[in-house]
Image (tube, rainbow, N blue to C red; front, side, top):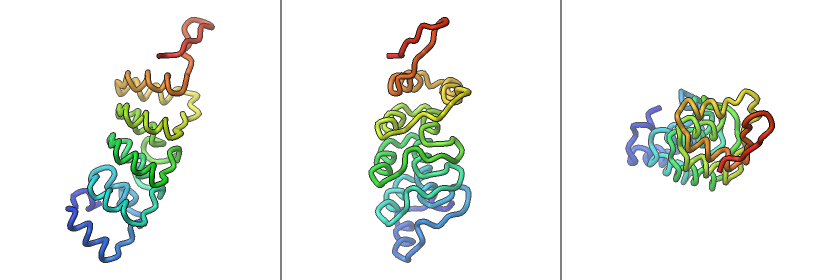
Length: 162
C-alpha cells in the first residue's frame, strides 16, 4: 500500500479530498493497518479521522496487531484509547498478543495484558513455543508472571515464575 512511503503532506491531501479511510483491500487490509506497520506518522493522521480501528483483514488482521508486531508501544496505546479490541483473532499472528510475543516486544506485551489481553486457549503451547523460538526470554517470564501460569517441575510441584 502506498501509505508506507507516503509523506504527511500527501496523506493530508488525500484526507482533504475525502478518501475513504476505512476502505479494505490489498496486502495490509486497510490504510490504517499499513500505516501502523510502516508509517507511524501517517497512522497518527488517520487516527484523527473517523477511522474504524477494529476493521479486520489483510496480513496483520487488525491495526493493533500490526502495531504490536513492530513494537510501537505509543501507537498501541493510542489504538487502545480509540477503542481497539485487544482480543480480536485473525491475521498472521492470530492476535495482537501473539504478534508482540513473536517479535519480543516486552513493553507491548505488558500494555496488552494491562488492557485485558487473554492468553489463547493454547493446548499445544503455541504461545510458549513461539516465544522460545524467537528468543524472548524476558517476554516468557513476563507472561508467566502476568497471567500467573503455573510452571510444573517434576510430577506435581507447581511454581509461578517471578
